[in-house]
Amino acid sequence: MQNKKVVVALGHSAFGKTFPEQQESIKNAAVAIADLVEAKYQVVITHSNAPQVGMIHTAMTEYSRLDKEQTVAPMSICSAMSQGYIGYDLQNAIRTELLQRGIYKTVSTIITQVRVDTFDPAFHNPTKVIGRIMSEEEAKEEEQKGNYVIPVADGFRRIIAAPKPIDIYEIDAIRALLDAGQVVIACGGGGIPVLEQGTKLKGASAVIEKDLVSAKMAELLNADTLLLLTGVDRVFLNFGSDNETPLETVTLEEAKNYMNEGHFAAGSMQPKVEAAIKFVSTNPEHTAIISHLDKARSAIKGKTGTHFVK
Ligand SMILES: Nc1ncnc2c1ncn2[C@@H]1O[C@H](COP(=O)(O)OP(=O)(O)O)[C@@H](O)[C@H]1O
Ligand SMILES: NC(=O)OP(=O)(O)O
Image 1: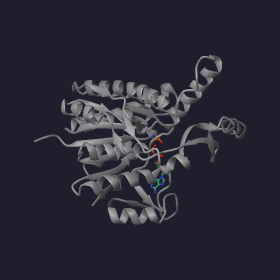
Image 2: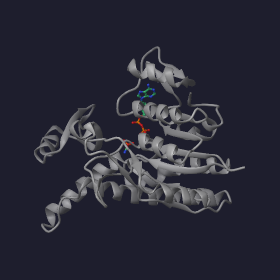
Image 3: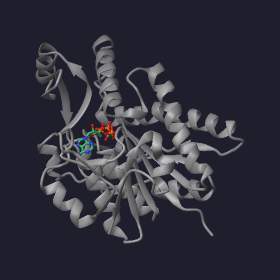
Image 4: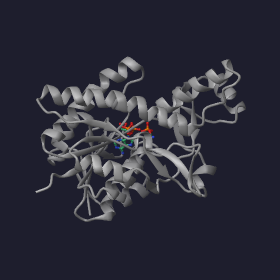
């Protein structure tokens, strides 16, 4: 019998804010992934990149100020860079964790491009928060450069378009590596958003929601489970209030109703619930789970997390 397939999405809590913090935090994520490999799952991983892609864009913009021959880096190139260095850290951490358990498996990162639609309304309504927290003065400078900002709890942050993922160009490569028994990191940071122009793929100035691309990839790979790992044990109704209620098993209809009632914060829990609904809708046998990063193994066994069923 073939091993079960799981697409795992790693959120911010897997990474930390600095390069050393990332290398340290990622060890936790590696434990979660190794647990799944040990439990005989075929594993594909996607990950966050919103803080990192903003950092890279700022760094590249500064470089272009110093070297007049260089242009400002397109956001699509910054996405590719984020896939590269996050994948590099993840590959190494997972490889080490597996070796320490006596498991030898190649862990590969695929630079992944994802088709988006030129007419996606998201291009006229940026909502995806990226980069660091800025002061009001810095935010004004960003706006002068033509970028968009919004106020957040401790200052301001950049926002960018988040078009919907339509298709994944490297899906056959991802499938081939999985079938060869490898652990695969793909569609990192939602994948690089691209527009099809004849035979060419043109990078779009956007960042795709990684939870939504995870659902798309899980659907295309016919995965059994979509596992969205984040900073809370479960999804809650009335989150953060005195009467918050954890959800254990939710049907798609219930999930849609709760979403319409506004229980899930935009840009954080809402895209996860949306991704879970999308994935389970494609096949009644499929399950989507939202769980804490540290509880991946017990979540997939049904002991914790919020489970979405048809
Ligand atoms: N209804 C809810 N139930 C649980 N957590 C919620 C809810 N609404 C918002 N949140 C917040 O959303 C966070 C997950 O979003 P975020 O941190 O952006 O995701 P990621 O882990 O993918 O980076 C949780 O840690 C929690 O603080
Ligand atoms: N691309 C993406 O969804 O990144 P975050 O999870 O960091 O927001």
